[in-house]
Length: 412
Image 1 (tube, rainbow, N blue to C red):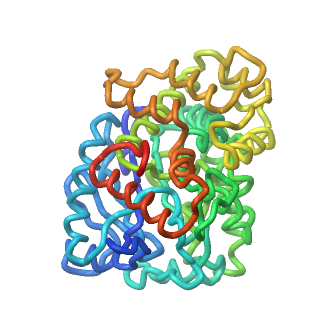
Image 2 (image 1 turned 135 degrees about the vertical axis):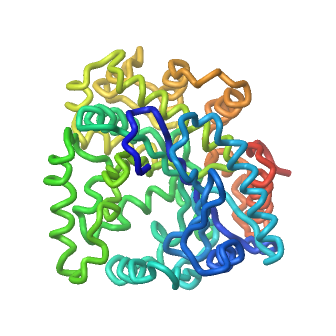
């Protein structure tokens, strides 16, 4: 997002997928070869019209994103779906395919991680030297990033406050990573459980993941960016990492493109599911931004610790999380003193104005709200059988869902 856009006038979506072997479904570190096939050289990003293919950090990951801000999220599912099928056709010649979900279910990052060795490799070597990238939270994670623009400090403050309130309950809607190294981890969103501490060697780069209230760019630079640059300086004397993208809070300001990037959404089983989540988040943020039921001052006043507690609970229990914080529920205009996170999202979704109320979007959202996030549906399909044979059956079906553009409902 290079141009300055007003809030809610354009959106950037980034979807990350694993490249896996077609038969074994184990990770396959060939993203550089795939991009080379397309571009004729080793590059980190290739533009393909309205979408771009890119890679960051590890060779088994491919990111798909819209090249420029799109004014209407509802226009994107078909576009992403068509490109996924194109990528899978390219990968077929390499005996590979794309796999969705927030984590690979049996990858061992200690022995399987291969870092990107080409353009920008010095950045990834620095990350690995300082933070140790050959572990979960770094090498084994796939997410959707939702970028929302702002034009000035006033829009930034309102957008940041609204997004900050929604961050804690995002796993209740989008958790898709209940399994790691062949076992149920005890968390519906294992990707985020690892994410909470992955960069904690430099605490100022991530804080408590839920950011504190910030009201201006100057305040952001003073309280977030400058402290993390100072803290990492002794380990990064060449200043390779001293840029705003070092900040890995759950929502981060990208002043280079005047947008806030939401980072706490696991990637789903197909773009239709990803984009309906993005649309519900957009509309829920918009309602808060417009102060329809509660003032900006009240939104900004809730403590970060209160939000962090809800986030941690939702990482563990997703839609079944019991929320009892009455101040928080009041900010969400929920008409009771306690609820499950699922009920809160049902309330927010009922209030959200999905553009044109397109029926497929309603169907996708209904599946998530009634059957649970993808993580819950994965565990239901695995049915306590964590053998690799059963995991392959389930995740092969997930990969088929991605290619065919349908939601994951059941598996034989």
